[in-house]
Length: 211
Ligand SMILES: [Zn+2]
Image 1 (cartoon, rainbow, N blue to C red):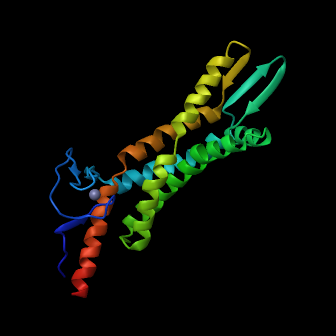
Image 2: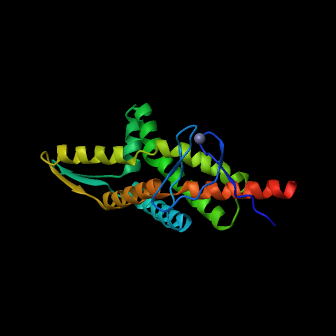
Image 3: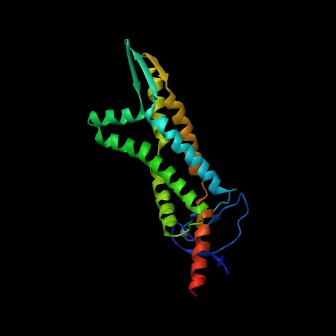
């Protein structure tokens, strides 16, 4: 069986381009839309699997365990990320609550979940339509995951409140910081181009079989 490896498809504009070898550390750019086509890294699937499992596991304590504990005027209060969103909803700031819920909880969760599914399919050599849909969805949802904005908000609140009473960072904060780190690493380092290349090979092989 012959594999057609002469062309690759651009994931941004679907342009079909001649395949060239890209050395490690260099990148290949689409001449039509200027999108990055290829920036090779070692074993992208295993790295994606490890980082997405780490992020998803850390999300549970990061969202449900106390981010901060307050001891003000003799009153003890504990706040988790989920409680914060619920409090915004209850206070009538539904648009802000929806935005925080989507950008800080749902989008990062979806992104890591999608990377996990993509890596599992790639590991099982399933380069069909489902993988293509997941890859396109991951590239769209990635822009909405804004954990760092929430992190900045927590730090500003912490600095402002530290003078007016006893504020302590909770376990949730440590988990949130580690989750932010693993999610960011996954976003920056996940080599979707290596997987798109495999999709191109798979399509080439299908066309070869049809001919
Ligand atoms: Zn392109």
